[in-house]
Length: 326
Image (cartoon, rainbow, N blue to C red; front, side):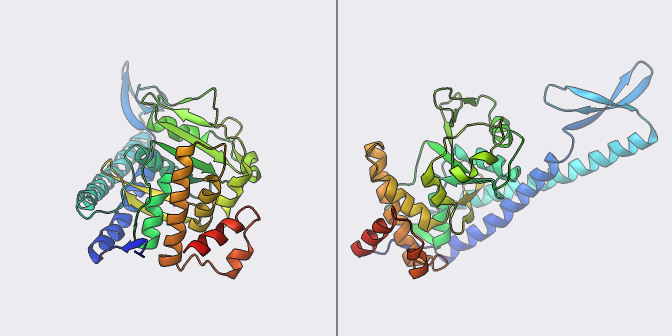
């Protein structure tokens, strides 16, 4: 029987290690710029000069007062800090793009183009640090990196993105909705399926939530997910945290559920009669593939007696069947 995981070559592994360092430098620069005012400008009104803070692309803003020596210093420090972060961003972005150019000929796992900007914005706003997980098919490149190789014969492309709300403390702001609108202001809530947002290109973002985390979503944040008991499984174990090359020429950070629980959740989904038959087939293939990869190449995620003993009644028979079929 052919191994499920084809290990990365030394050259592939080196490219992925470099990519993470370069991506982290890029996101640090993005965060540095985001912490600054959108822009500061001098503005002459009559015979006096004022310092203005511009807050958006439409040049809306407010006066910070007459241009005193103190405000002149503030303006200079702002320009210097902004230039520093812009320079760092430009250099890091070029290095990330350089890695992407070698990712294709090296046949590295690639994330689809559309989710890249969304995931980078989510990361820039630190939502991957305990607030949001990526779930569904887009997790697969992260699991490949975690396994140290390509997972063979697994469906890994999708035309949407699924996110899971995972915050343990209540959030008051529209944190996710602001991130989506920052990427594409055409995102609107699907009023018939309020757990889903869609942009003008019909690209969909769905938000899922476990009942134990539903109350932590801000009251005005969007989308508005329906609590699903099976989402509790995806909160268990240790999440995977990887940076993968993206088909838009950049990279994206993926924080995904523990691959053992992801795989068993997929095997469970694939047996739900109410689910789309085409999706059920994909679910089963992904569940088998990821569990195989865990068994072969992820010793950091043991399939031992302790793990088996933690399985709920819905999942224990699925794991037993998978193990028996190997």
